[in-house]
Length: 620
Image (cartoon, rainbow, N blue to C red; front, side):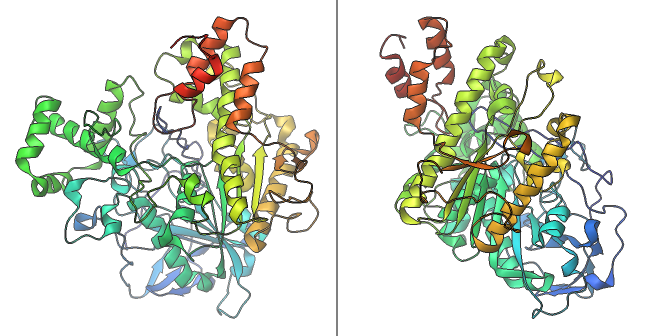
């Protein structure tokens, strides 16, 4: 069976950044391709799945590892833009010694996977998962043996990049006695593309939704329910955990009726409700009901222009009307990932943004896979898959993202003081909108089962490539602590960890792994697995005024501790109004303008907020 080679053995340095103005996406993290290129099949790892037998290898920390396990049929040919199907059966032992191919995505200078001559990485044959088990899982033969909690990692990368092997689960599995699973899911235009030409009598509502990446994760969860006992896992204790876009996907799975019963706990790291309506995802920008800049129809127009079938947008619009839906479906079906990538980059360049596929529509509120209402409304009404949820952000989420998401040239003109202030307020907005508002909504219907944190650990040296700025507790840094491995977070961050801060890192990492695993075990992080850490209280618990948010920091700054911290949009407005750091009314107005966005997604202040803040003194 075909295996995919990854280079080198240790995939440090993988930091394919995929960000946009319209969507604060995730980062693609460095991978530790466990045993890649050196793995030797071990007979004690033979397991029987419903599709066939697999054999893995013994990895780090004495545990067992299975990589590149197919959970669905390859979505290629006529299966592109269709719901995932169960994997085909196989005879004999399938060697699961290396990650399966990542899903199609842009190549990057730090990307460890081999790219083709058109700058693409991976393939459409990519629906694989990876499993890490502790020493207890080695040689396990019987489902009657003790079953372990299962932690399913949903990777970040803006839903346009990344893969399920980016964060090595070996240490988390070994030290916390859990099963860790990393999942690939379709990305970019093959994972999130809704177009009228792809609808028809032969497709059901799920396939017409455009949410193929989300359907892949649901299929992987079905596979886990059917097979994880063979690997030592308990299908009744499945916890999803993920960062950034992966965390956004988990929020979506909480809301999706199609994911009901497939997992029991959720950990959401730097996520939020960044969904889109079908109109936004599909229509062109000058329709009476307009779509976003990178809607599927806007992309189709650029594809036709790039092919020379139309001289400009107007000619391309006329072409699509003449050709009809069937012809456009066939046309789209034969376009490569590189073709789509080129179209997204064309649109980005036209709008003065960094050339990137990021910002394309995703997580579409289609009414079948996802409810038509915004997530916060779904949560407030209790119309979601209710379960224990642990959610949080980092203190300085935007320190890395800000200069990457701003329009070109803007960051170069930004002074240091303004940069830090903007990071401060935008990061507070992320906590307010992505954590505290959902926590309040879920608490109303699911009291005692919502746990909130803020990750404050910030012992990083100045980043020379960003004009010596301090990144602080930046977006994605907490991943290195959750997995107990600096290679699990972006390399350009973790290489900045100050040598004298290593003991602090190690102590907080051990605490976070313990909290995360205890939550996976029981639905309550409590005092960690050994019951030795400060007790993490649920949102709405006794003495709630003093105990809303767990602050996660090293022992040199008090260690993990509960705080009264809660952020709302109103509290941020009040803080802005009373902020004495502004030199003049004009400087306050300019800062406010920098925080206002007319974009339809993302955590920004609105024009209405601006009017309220400025009280008419700043002009329009």
